[in-house]
Length: 348
Image (cartoon, rainbow, N blue to C red; front, side, top):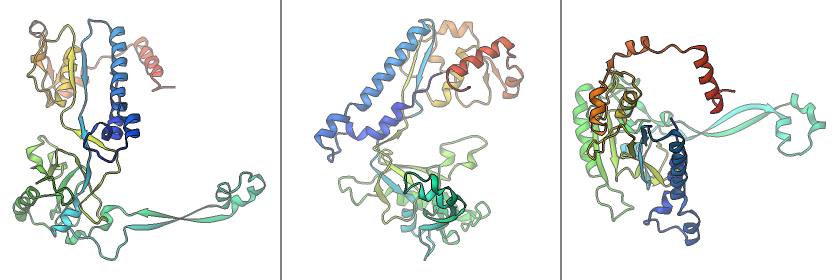
């Protein structure tokens, strides 16, 4: 398996140079950077081509991205919006900045001022106070006993539910009414600085509408999307407006990515609609390994040669059985694996 991360970084940083709607860019900047993303894709394409030439035609290949890309326009400061709705309270009189005091030695300070500090080594024994100004954590700034909802780090909205949250104030019987209120106000959300945009809320869903399984309760209560995900979730409360310009580049992830599967065992099909959770079971099947019953994904059978499927029955096992059936490697096999990992830089 090979992972290419460079194209992700390029799209985060250079998306604005392929977005015709960005009027701030100068002609000289466009000339220099407009080809950065395309060049990145070409380099990866060349690298994949080299891998395929060495692997041979009998190998089945999957090319998968865990997300797509699109423009990143602004931050959406969710906690600020909740504050405007009267659902979140910020502590009064508490500065978003705080001072951090620590001690170093005078010699370390002097090395930043003088080139030659050999004769000043004795100053290592002299303590020197250092003061740093730090940003307070968002959780420190919120008055939890007066807050009904808050922004979750995972990109959603959490209800400050009594008995679940450390300082919960919302009774279980109030949850449905609060969610109905969220959805109503979210459907009316507008960005006043973008008059050409009308209502910008795409959708807002409960966690149960998105996830399933034993760990659903660990997710945020609600998730949402704004303007086709071009407005990025941000938890900060020490801001003046619920919208602000992004400092993370100009591109951000989208739901739909890249999926290519090719090889002698594949069958052309345009209607498989693959999901990320389908990749692992499909790869296990191609490797001749059993698929764990606990996996949520399915084998992409429509894209596999029907004759191969008939002659190679899918094997399913429980995860516990999978561990018991794991192959034992000989000392020779282990040495080959070790040398391979050294070649990749994972071992020294």
